[in-house]
Image (tube, rainbow, N blue to C red; front, side, top):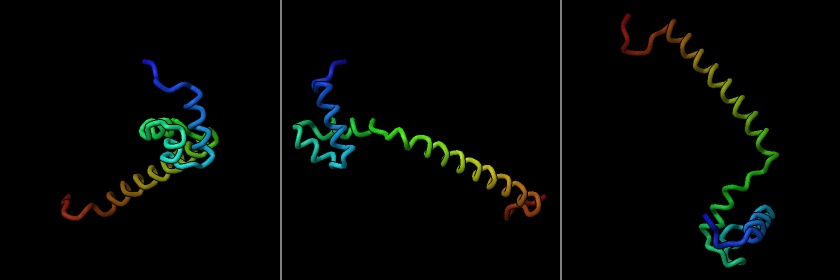
Length: 85
């Protein structure tokens, strides 16, 4: 599939977005449809943020596991309301 925009346009859009310019403004400046700019912006991910995100995911997964174990332990001691043994 070919794109109607040259690669240089995409590069320039991503540069302006990384500098902090709003996507709508970038679209007007470069005369590119805003939907294209928004789509290209979704592909812009700071590589330095990936390790932080992965670390946070691991923390949350460990917390979730602890919560599940706690709920299981509490269910053994006190069953949920309305449950008979």
